[in-house]
Length: 103
Image 1 (spheres, rainbow, N blue to C red):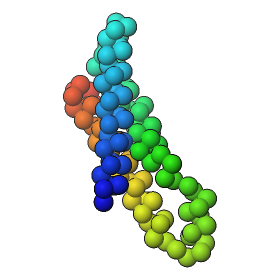
Image 2: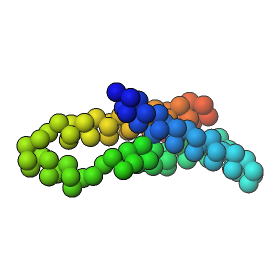
Image 3: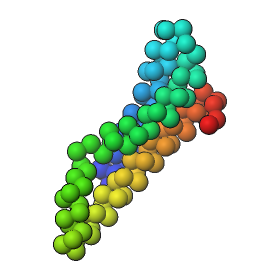
Image 4: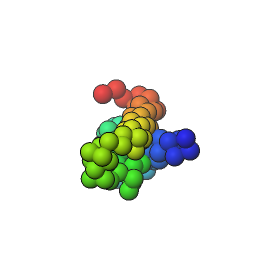
Protein backbone atom coordinates (compact mmCIF):
# COMPACT_ATOMS: atom_id res chain seq x y z
CA UNK A 1 0.00 0.00 0.00
CA UNK A 2 2.86 2.36 0.79
CA UNK A 3 4.34 1.82 -2.68
CA UNK A 4 0.98 2.63 -4.28
CA UNK A 5 0.70 5.93 -2.38
CA UNK A 6 4.31 6.81 -3.18
CA UNK A 7 3.78 6.07 -6.88
CA UNK A 8 0.68 8.29 -6.97
CA UNK A 9 2.41 11.26 -5.38
CA UNK A 10 5.59 10.93 -7.44
CA UNK A 11 3.53 11.13 -10.65
CA UNK A 12 1.48 13.99 -9.20
CA UNK A 13 4.61 15.85 -8.09
CA UNK A 14 6.36 15.51 -11.43
CA UNK A 15 3.42 17.11 -13.24
CA UNK A 16 2.63 19.84 -10.71
CA UNK A 17 6.25 20.66 -9.87
CA UNK A 18 7.32 20.69 -13.50
CA UNK A 19 4.43 22.93 -14.50
CA UNK A 20 5.06 25.37 -11.64
CA UNK A 21 8.78 25.51 -12.38
CA UNK A 22 8.06 25.95 -16.07
CA UNK A 23 5.70 28.80 -15.21
CA UNK A 24 8.53 30.57 -13.41
CA UNK A 25 10.73 30.03 -16.45
CA UNK A 26 8.04 31.41 -18.73
CA UNK A 27 7.69 34.47 -16.51
CA UNK A 28 11.45 35.08 -16.58
CA UNK A 29 11.48 34.85 -20.38
CA UNK A 30 8.46 37.17 -20.68
CA UNK A 31 6.07 34.52 -21.99
CA UNK A 32 2.56 34.00 -20.58
CA UNK A 33 3.18 31.88 -17.46
CA UNK A 34 -0.36 30.58 -16.94
CA UNK A 35 -0.73 29.36 -20.50
CA UNK A 36 2.74 27.83 -20.34
CA UNK A 37 1.86 26.04 -17.11
CA UNK A 38 -1.27 24.53 -18.66
CA UNK A 39 0.65 23.37 -21.74
CA UNK A 40 3.47 21.94 -19.63
CA UNK A 41 1.04 20.03 -17.43
CA UNK A 42 -0.35 18.30 -20.52
CA UNK A 43 3.14 17.57 -21.87
CA UNK A 44 4.47 16.29 -18.54
CA UNK A 45 1.66 13.80 -17.95
CA UNK A 46 3.47 10.95 -19.73
CA UNK A 47 6.71 11.81 -17.94
CA UNK A 48 4.91 11.72 -14.61
CA UNK A 49 3.75 8.22 -15.46
CA UNK A 50 7.20 7.07 -16.58
CA UNK A 51 8.99 8.73 -13.66
CA UNK A 52 6.66 7.24 -11.07
CA UNK A 53 7.05 3.73 -12.43
CA UNK A 54 10.81 4.10 -12.68
CA UNK A 55 12.64 0.83 -12.87
CA UNK A 56 9.74 -1.23 -11.57
CA UNK A 57 8.39 -2.08 -15.01
CA UNK A 58 10.24 -4.94 -16.65
CA UNK A 59 7.93 -5.97 -19.46
CA UNK A 60 9.86 -9.05 -20.53
CA UNK A 61 9.82 -10.43 -17.01
CA UNK A 62 6.07 -9.79 -16.79
CA UNK A 63 5.46 -11.57 -20.11
CA UNK A 64 7.45 -14.54 -18.85
CA UNK A 65 5.35 -14.67 -15.68
CA UNK A 66 2.14 -14.61 -17.74
CA UNK A 67 3.39 -17.56 -19.79
CA UNK A 68 4.26 -19.43 -16.59
CA UNK A 69 0.74 -18.85 -15.27
CA UNK A 70 1.68 -16.48 -12.43
CA UNK A 71 -0.68 -13.51 -12.79
CA UNK A 72 -0.22 -11.88 -9.37
CA UNK A 73 2.87 -9.80 -10.31
CA UNK A 74 1.16 -8.77 -13.55
CA UNK A 75 -1.92 -7.60 -11.62
CA UNK A 76 0.27 -5.65 -9.19
CA UNK A 77 2.07 -3.99 -12.09
CA UNK A 78 -1.22 -3.02 -13.72
CA UNK A 79 -2.38 -1.47 -10.44
CA UNK A 80 0.86 0.55 -10.28
CA UNK A 81 0.37 1.76 -13.87
CA UNK A 82 -3.21 2.84 -13.16
CA UNK A 83 -2.20 4.60 -9.93
CA UNK A 84 0.67 6.41 -11.67
CA UNK A 85 -1.69 7.49 -14.44
CA UNK A 86 -4.21 8.76 -11.89
CA UNK A 87 -1.51 10.75 -10.10
CA UNK A 88 -0.34 12.36 -13.33
CA UNK A 89 -3.90 13.03 -14.51
CA UNK A 90 -5.02 14.56 -11.21
CA UNK A 91 -1.86 16.68 -11.21
CA UNK A 92 -2.81 17.96 -14.66
CA UNK A 93 -6.35 18.69 -13.49
CA UNK A 94 -5.00 20.61 -10.48
CA UNK A 95 -2.73 22.74 -12.65
CA UNK A 96 -5.58 23.48 -15.05
CA UNK A 97 -7.77 24.42 -12.09
CA UNK A 98 -5.02 26.65 -10.71
CA UNK A 99 -4.56 28.56 -13.96
CA UNK A 100 -8.24 28.33 -15.01
CA UNK A 101 -7.50 26.84 -18.44
CA UNK A 102 -9.62 24.04 -19.86
CA UNK A 103 -8.46 21.77 -22.62
